[in-house]
Image (cartoon, rainbow, N blue to C red; front, side):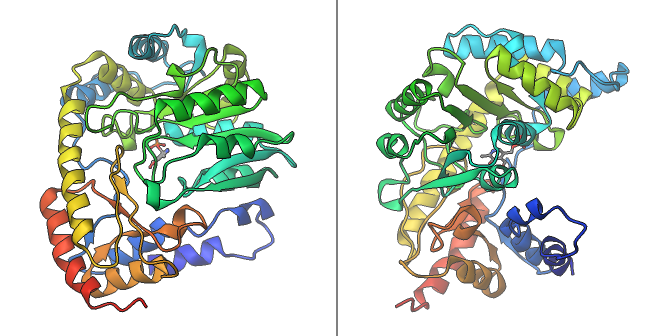
Length: 400
Ligand SMILES: Cc1ncc(COP(=O)(O)O)c(C=O)c1O
């Protein structure tokens, strides 16, 4: 069974493996999805990518590139046309001048996160991350000997972040602060004041803010997006990461980027050549098509996600034992179960007993073991159907 293979691999004691690999946890998402693959009639509230096809002009961009023989390597920093398009796009969006030398194109945001964290983490260096957070950050820091300091976020205030708490945790040994707004797994969007306070203090204390902005277009209720790029006076202490994966439904095309000072980009370019060389060439052309083409896809997708979010909030509200809040971005909600309830058991039982796949809170840190991540990257009908199963199931539970 695929499920047990995963466990065997990740928990292997075979001495061939670098002990640093022990920092990589058994991936909670894969475990659930593999288990679900062996069951019939499962409704997935576990999906981490858009459920809509990529827009036609993006697909054409990749196909045209392939037909035109664009199958070789690009320049190490990325396809020049894409670097130009990204610099223009960000320049217009945040009214700040960026040159192509401020950008490196990577194999998805994942590689950008990998480069940023592994190029800065070293024994004794501290990094502040939030709990819950996207599961890549802490292992990448620890793998290189860095120390992870977590700041717990609480459901009572929609998992908002108190910037003062971040500032109070900065020490002489702090090298980086990792933020992700809107957040995976909570969908929380940090207001401009929060980002500004953190970015300002970090620059003053010579600490880098590494900002994962992959959901920067999935923002609801017409709010403006407070990117770190619109909150910093220069790029000396920031690394901003994003990708096409979520915005254009291009997760499988694997194109992301990192924006930083020209000095930092030079350093990371060398490292990038020793990791993945370059991102996929036809995919980078698809990225150029995405940025140069119409943006109605994003507007339609955001409107659809907002409808789903609104309905999900109502459904969670009606569910016994589940406490929700209003997520303002991405396509996740992280409702909590009563204090002390093991979310992992609940997620497993819901999968086995009612065939609804969610992801347990402990996948994203230690602080919210009693939460479940629900993704609404699935149709409204599926969301309704899932709660037709969840609500009566929860009514029968006695968590006291
Ligand atoms: C917060 C966050 N960062 C990064 C990624 C990875 O994005 P990419 O597909 O561009 O590598 C994801 C994907 O789920 C994510 O949720």
